[in-house]
Length: 375
Image (cartoon, rainbow, N blue to C red; front, side, top):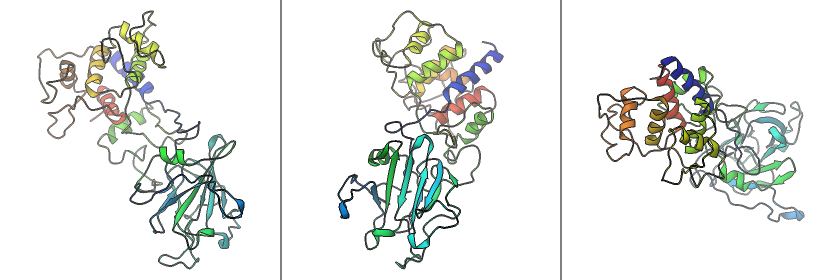
């Protein structure tokens, strides 16, 4: 395969592989970030109390996220949006401090979230003289998912009760139970910084960050959280079904009239799976099944790329010590010979970790190296 075609093919593959997915957690709602930073059971806890009776004939319209008696735990926006109310006021010039501290944020698609009982106390006191809303957060201001908007407290009718955030989720049709959204939300250990290096905030500690930024600079990836696309989701896995689609589109393979596997009829990738198998590139997880929803293993990735691009290992070099039990050992070594992989245990890099799942970050590095731009 010519080098020019290989580079063009890899760019096409990457463009498909890293197209930003439209994530949804429950009933078409956004893929939330959990509104209180920290770790479940350590920094905060909650339970499903939506609809529980309250005084005056009211019912509970949110979920209470308690912070074990600690005020001042950071609260973040659960999704991109625009601040609508602060202290129940939509006027940035009239934020009545006597009604501190509440907030609501409007999100795309007609969704909104509400944050109540933010901290209104001077640190270390219960004097009601504080301001539990982050600087610059006023009605009309745009915020990003994970951005600091305030701190947990006991304001409003929570005075005398344990500090907690009352969090509501409102769909286009009205209030919904926040619990499923809280359960599925991404947890973060600290608010997302307003400034960070590179294109994405969630790859700062990844050894693949430079290569992720390379493919972002080339326009190959736009991130994983539209419309902001400031996250790359480097630890997310790629499935076997997705890999089939990437390869078929890259090579423009024709449809197959043969149904090669018994377990992919419900998969959106069924046609892609049959097409790449017909071309001699695809292979199953057994003789009759493909396992389209399984996360792609690193050893399988090696086999797919060797079949697609024709990498060889003419000197039969054995570069890794942990792939002896892999059915795809020859392909793993071929990738190593061509510099597409350097192993998984730097600086020695004598392991390949064949049975680990392949992450988006790792795939970014494979692409960047194939384009002779990566490290």
